[in-house]
Length: 127
Image (cartoon, rainbow, N blue to C red; front, side, top):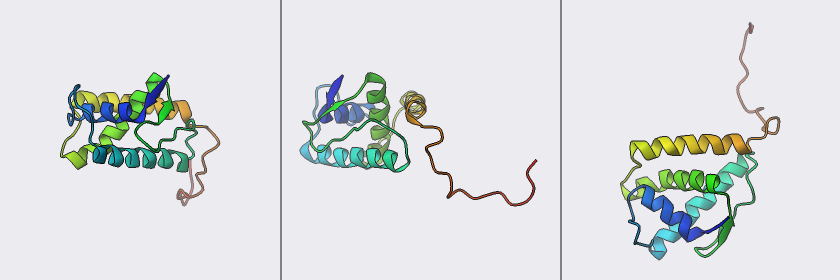
């Protein structure tokens, strides 16, 4: 399934109540949201989360993305955009966001591929 960047951003902004179903984001809102979305994808790749090659540069770009990923990414984008609008997700939407993101992370986490060498090592005897 493909979705445009505009549709993904609209979904995120509706989740926080910044848009209703009949509204579209402004050009400035789209630019900010796409920058945030690019940062989210970069953060995941930098964390060795093996996500598909999701990339977006403009509002008309299409992402080949399945429905489950779309909801997880839209919710994470909503969480990141909400403070800029002085808004937040409802408790129900926040719970759904956590659940979808947990499933997303489990789907793409590659056991044995993540480097934990920067984590502190416990001193002393371990039982």
